[in-house]
Length: 420
Image (cartoon, rainbow, N blue to C red; front, side):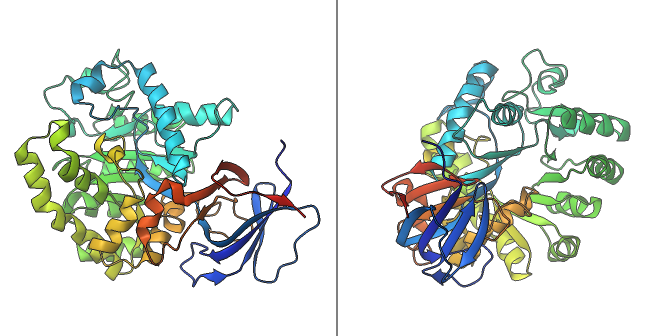
């Protein structure tokens, strides 16, 4: 059956994603892919398809602003990941993406791995449906001294030289010096990347000249830069160089947050990865020492997000799902919202804004989605319950009664549209 040109959602409660107070008994009018009108007492057009969501919460689709389309199986070890062919991992990544949409995530930002590029291309070509909007970095740029597994040859990790297409289906490009950084940035953009991801691991980071030229190369192509930052030095250098998003943000200093706020930086949380290690690590072969270290440091991981909130920074949510298989042990990546509320002083509304409006900003599509406002894409979910009273409701996929992506109903659980 063809999609109706005009859809109307009659809400119980509307959370528009902007942070404004919820609106009771609002109406949302959707024309083709976009929202045309929002508010109370709006006249319903003739021959519109009316979706009755009275008694339920209508809100923007959720956004995971830091994940990976790696295609790992649950419980995969490094050896498993390396031995499984890239083609098999791509198929698994496709089904993982479908799970995201079913859980109410209408956009995902894949922060490393060529699988994201392949999936997005399949969507653009009309081959693949039923997955979220994918924003992808493709290959990540990495400092030669920050190799993920130092015992592995660089030729194995660098996707330009590896016969195995790099770790996790094509993960990194090693680059050293300004010229190499320009070449690597252009290489990943040429493969279809929407943004450039810099992977600054441990205590290593590109120097300021290298960072700035990566940012400049991205800007010349109307793209932005995201940085994995896990210590104060990396956070500071990334902000100074002009990166648009700082992910993880471990050890970030107040001064750097204030600098970033002035520059329009978006920060991305990833607490669920640590919690997954604590909760499920033993069954996945993590050592007791690794699990205890994560448990001991969990409070320290929450401190940056508390500070960012207190100082007025813009926070989006991420999960690092795909970088580890353990995150997918949870029923939904929406656990991250609960963690911000439980551990980082966020209100439920602030957590929802982080997972909608701010997630769109962190994905560089804030003008297109993330809020329920006229002119934006109709990326909308209908929730059975009030997430402002219980943020954990968003983790229950059975409570996500409808998922709409660009005006098309992709997931429907016991809601019946009617023509009036």
